[in-house]
Image 1: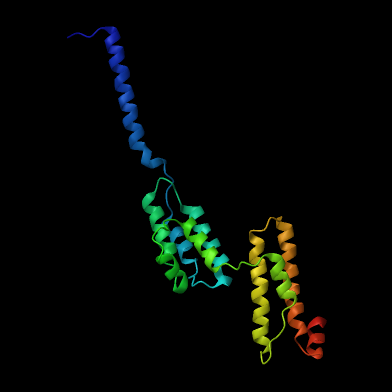
Image 2: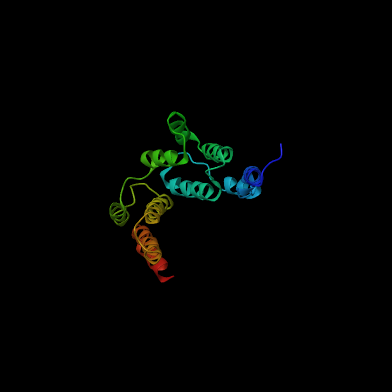
Length: 201
């Protein structure tokens, strides 16, 4: 059968559309950005193990957030599953038992939320400031142990600043302020001669 001009035009258009669709389909996987697996491994290796200690919670969460923000992709299910399993592999002790026993948890956001609810310090900044200001050395406690307690409270205050509604300049100011508060609290527990020597430096 000899095709008319209009039939040839229609057939040609259909063939072009079909070819275009095939080319688009064949190119689709290439639209995804390449994965730097060496960098991915470095990100994973930089995440510390987490055992449920409140003082290490923010460091762990920030490290995992950096990993997810850098490599998570909605069209890469296998990679996303690998990232999630890598995060779970960093949990040990109480944190591992808590998350491992919750079968409904299936994402990093859910893991992060349950860790904060169970291991995060629930005191607000004002309460922590008050506790640091009024911290006293216990009977028979050595100065090294007391100094660690001062540092722990300071670390908690600084970690609260990360999520506080403050500018970067304000966060830097308060971070230095809490450092000085911890030093003043620790210094008060020393004998007068040591206090004088520290303040003189």
